[in-house]
Length: 125
Image 1 (cartoon, helix red, strand yellow):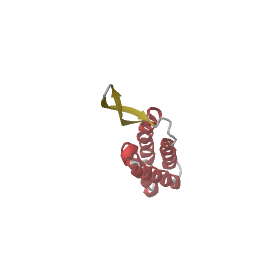
Image 2 (image 1 turned 120 degrees about the vertical axis):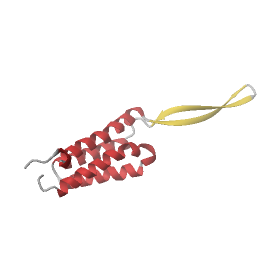
Image 3 (image 1 turned 180 degrees about the vertical axis):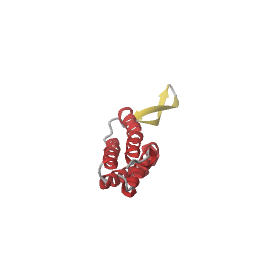
Image 4 (image 1 turned 90 degrees about the vertical axis):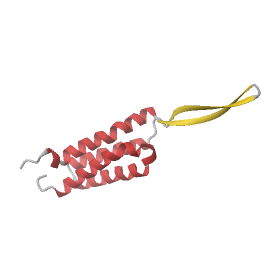
């Protein structure tokens, strides 16, 4: 029995993994941009200097997203329980980190949950 592309959980697992892993790997190697304000004195005057700094490169928390997405993508391919565990893990992490990186990973997490649901409720897989 053939399954169309839009009902295939493998498609959603692969696309979700790519959408989660791409921004996470970027921020893992580059860090997150923050604004730092420092005050300096030149002569008798005091000045405020605002600069953008990149902090948090090689933060191992970013790897949790990739590991969870890999488990979910593997589960969408092979195992229903792994698909649910990985996709819900990435979804919860995305919601918890929504103000830093979670907004970038949320579409991929939704696709992974969709793949897990299709894996569960499809009769042809």
